[in-house]
Image 1: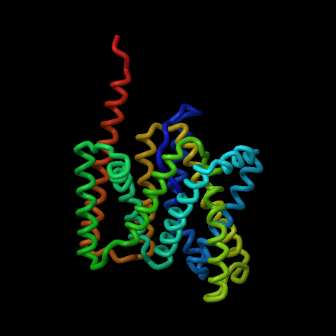
Image 2 (image 1 turned 30 degrees about the horizontal axis):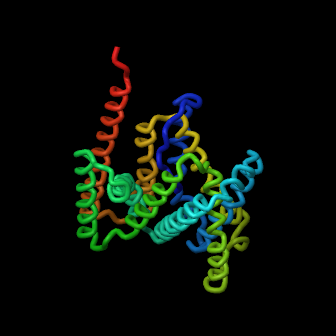
Image 3 (image 1 turned 135 degrees about the vertical axis):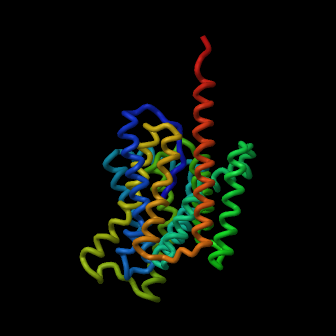
Amino acid sequence: MTDPTPVPARRVGGQGIGLVFSISAYGVWGFLPGFFLLLAPASPWEIVAFRILMSLVFCAILLTVTRGWRAFLELARQPRVLGAMALAGVLIYINWQVFVLATLGGHVVEGSLGYFINPVITVALGVVLLRERLRPLQWVAVGVSVIAILVIALGYGAFPWIALALALSFGFYGFIKKRVGGQVDAVSGLTLETVWLTPVAIVQLVVTGVTVGLTFGTVSPVHTLLMVATGVITATPLLLFAAAARRLPLVALGLTQYLAPILQFLTGVFLLNEPMPLGRWIGFALVWLSLVLLTVDMVRAARASRRASVPVA
């Protein structure tokens, strides 16, 4: 997945098409585990390396088609933007690599947990890094999430490192992207991130080639095509989300973001038959409770903001 941090909605087109874009974006992110499983027997390291390189190629094509190279080069001349995108690249690399390792290692459910608790992590980052003050329901949601993680750790017999790595890397990634603000568009941002990561991808391919071996071009034409398509599958939901964010209010975007981890959870439990002991069910139930609390608080805050903005006659 890429950055789902909501941005202020603008009325560009109808909200109906905006909802279609948002559901499509999160739907693609939700089915990513199934897509990566189709790339076997490629190793997680080869998959992520191709995801980086093919994303760069796809973004270059998009910049050419949309005539966005001039704006991109202007951004590339700004040290602050370059530094922010380099750090964002490191974080999204961690997120991508952990996610693919989890998927191919039989931990899709734990991966979905990371994206379920990501909204709570985002709230916590606001408190720690931006000195934001939480509303009472937000405090309760954070507390319930902490209890949920402890319950899962105790009930499952292992600390959910995968979930926390995904939630923290994606949370900090979203924080950096939000700090950059509207200065960097989706395609230019992803292009800069993948440019920074290209040397990592090349080294990763070389090491993989001399150790376990590369599968690209050796399995079947379909497998080769799917490996190339990793760039499209990475960039497309990001662009769909960017289109949705211009058309939908923040509340609608916030509600649709739960679609991706729900689909990942269902994939892990019902299609891949990953174990779900009682402790894990209780932990997930607590996480879902915290998300309900956050959603209620978000809706209340949005309504209060609208009432405050209505002029008094």
